[in-house]
Image (cartoon, rainbow, N blue to C red; front, side, top):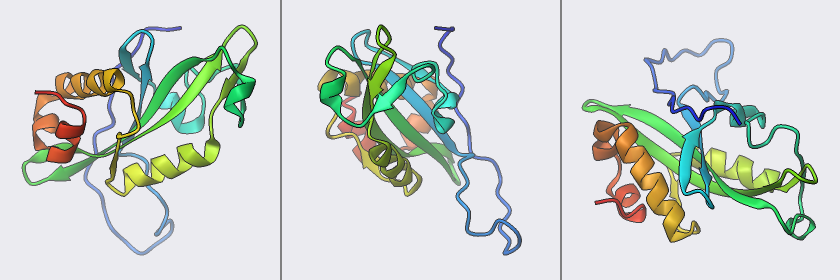
Length: 165
């Protein structure tokens, strides 16, 4: 696996118009953060936007978790960044699970869950309650260290749910 990057997509100035493309989703302000649960590490991989991340490459995903009993667990967290007058902040955060077993080139993920969580993040929801405590702390530490100002401007619910002091 290549070096883990940490490039977040920050929302730029948007022009609003009613012309071609009006009503389409703009994913320019969304990033994908993976959490390697076993290693306790978080990293950005924008390839996840098109299911082409380093974690997902070369893996055939199955819709039944029991078919991949030895899969390595990950969280894929969709992070949406928005702007206020004070500056950018983490506006939407929604996590979904996946597992990968490289030895058999198979993995588990629920595509509908991933799409729904992406949509929830875009709609500025915070959905991390179902994550294990260790992973919540890893994500909170990663987000707060990546950009302290964005972290400080984020919703109190996000900071509380990820238990970072």
